[in-house]
Amino acid sequence: MYFIKLLFLLLLLNLSSNVFFQYKEKKTEKVIADQKIDNKTSNTNDFDRAKHFFAIKKWDSTIVYTSKVLQASKKKKTIEYCHYIRGHSFMRKKIFKEAKKEYSFVSEKFPLYYLVLQNLGGISLEQKKIKEAICYFKTLQVHPNYSLVKSSVLHALGLAYFHLSRFDKAETYLLMSYSLQEKEKDTISLISSYTNIANLYYEQYKDSQAIPYFEKAYHLSKKIKSFKFRRKTSLNMSVIEENRKNLTKALIYRKEFEKWNDSLNDQNKIWSIAQVEKKYAVNQKQKQIKLLEVENKVKITQRNGFVISSILLLLLLSTSLYFYYRKNKTNKIILTQKNELDTLNATKDKLLSVISHDLRSSVNAFKQSSSKLLKDIDDNNYEKLPKIARKSIAIASSTSSLLDNILHWATIQNHQLYFSRESVNLFSVMEQIAYNYKPLFEDKNIIFKNTIPKSVFVWADLDSLKITTRNLLDNAIKFSKETGIISVYLYKEEDGFYYFVIEDTGIGMDKETQEALLKEGVLLNKKKNQKGLGTGLGIQLCKSMIKKNKGKFLIESTEGLGTKMIIALPKLVQNG
Image (cartoon, rainbow, N blue to C red; front, side):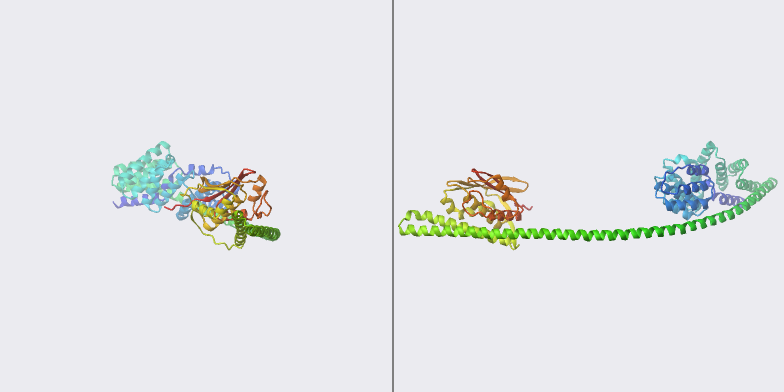
């Protein structure tokens, strides 16, 4: 029994470190060697060298040249191929930690990702992380390219379950793998499969089933040139015959084992010399790399110096342009402000001139009216007194409106006007304003109609709304004919606004006058056929008040037919 266990341990130790990597390695390396990467930015020669050394299994050189490609390339496809090649090289050198690290940079979309999974499973198997290895192989079984590595994956799963002493599953997978390898005529894989199946049966003391597989492995090993496999199969047969007490045959196999062992040792010496030569070549390459790195550093320093100089020059130029632009902008602002100031001064002078003229006219008219009133009293002409009194009241009201407008205008210009928006009933406001103008309506026999619905509420500042409607109503009276009609009504509802109109049947105005009144700025020109005040200050004040209330102002008029002053104010916002 001791020899049985010894045989099993020898076989398991000899094969476990190599058996997984018996997959079609030559084909895999040929796949890499045949890859044509379209990569204009990377060093193509270095990538070709890396493929060459990978094909001839010079792992160190492969690692060196893939490092160069990774430093120069920015193409994802090239980078992933390099990481795969490096992972494979580290795996073959049994530097498993680095191999795993390289494989971690390879995405699932990589064409050879199925080989990455296979290699990660093999590394886990080598590290005795059996359950982890099984997980990788199970994942690989659902991969689209599983059929390409099916036999080797089944073989690896059989080995994994063998390590876990789950002999039934191990047998199933190993026999499935063996069946596929026979169809593929994969000699090296078959030798490994025969040996592992034999070990499986031998571990269970099924000698009659195990020995034929050992013999198959031995006879098949003679057809290949690998000293390693001949040596292992000879040793296996020697131990088997020794255990069967057939010492003569055991001695023959033992001598054969020694023969192959000596051949392998000679080969190892050759390999040792090759390793020394390889190290020398690698050292030489490293020196060349260091020299290139120094040259690159010098070039980078020169390039950085040029870049920094260019940036400083660009900054200097940008700063100069910025200050030049700022100076021009400041000059333009100063010029604009000067022009505005000149305009305001001219406006102020003209406003004072016109207001003085209009106030003087109003005062003179009031004096004439008062003189006529006294004369009629002296002549006992009492019938004319009411008419003269109403005219005096109209002159006083007009003068008062002018003074109010000047006061409000000055308050707006100085930003001192208190402004608070609230819910306002439009019908009530119009009724209050109309009541104050009742004497003027009666003086000119004007009919006033307020048809705004009592349910209409707008969101506005009450004082500014009164100032606006008072001015517009005052203008409507001023430019209306005797026995005219002034109507206030709701025009429409649209986009959250109430549109209401103050319409008169007065003298109207032409298109040019309408456009002039709607322009920004104070208009000081007399309106056509105007008998009263003509500064245009009232309209400008109305426009400012409506704008502050977030509203709109429009004018529609026809000469000789009357005027419509249209005001749009926001509706009352209902919460909840």
